[in-house]
Image 1 (cartoon, rainbow, N blue to C red):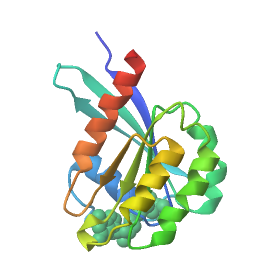
Image 2: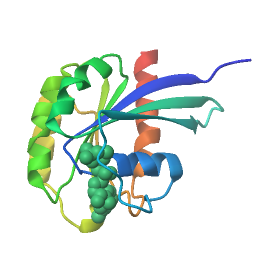
Image 3: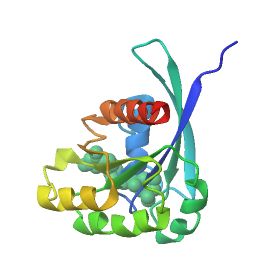
Image 4: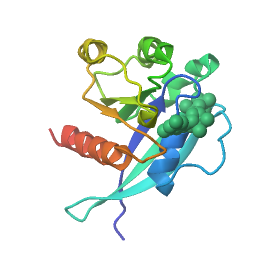
Length: 172
Ligand SMILES: Nc1nc2c(ncn2[C@@H]2O[C@H](COP(=O)(O)OP(=O)(O)OP(=O)(O)O)[C@@H](O)[C@H]2O)c(=O)[nH]1
Ligand SMILES: [Mg+2]
């Protein structure tokens, strides 16, 4: 029996930016009914994604808690990942600024496909495109998405696109 191909994706960013809600959207295609507990360490889930060519890819998702103490375990568990999602909440600008530290700790952005993700688009707040572009250029960010786990904006698109980019990189 043939096995599905798998890729590993890590999700990082400050506390309460909406990482686990995004993952809940990826997996269940809806917003959590109840407020989620803050993630302790990391949560692990798998989402199978069918591609246009008939292949099915198992995405292994590692969703890290945003408390600073989890930055200590982050590099170890992220050391062999194929994709990085860096999430921030544009209604709290410091969560964007803090990504400099998350990516510094990560330290291997040249090896993975890296997406910068703005959450909670339903709140109607955004970070200036100039700041976004500066960050993208500084850190080798492959794509930028604005998302909402409440409305589902760009959530499935983001994951699908990340998988496509990872597979393309592996082939090249
Ligand atoms: N308005 C709005 N609120 C959201 C959205 N996604 C998450 N939230 C809220 O943001 C808060 C934090 O969500 P979580 O998904 O637990 O955040 P997290 O980044 O996993 O937090 P940690 O596990 O503590 O790092 C919760 O109150 C959510 O209901 C969204 O798309 N829109
Ligand atoms: Mg969480």
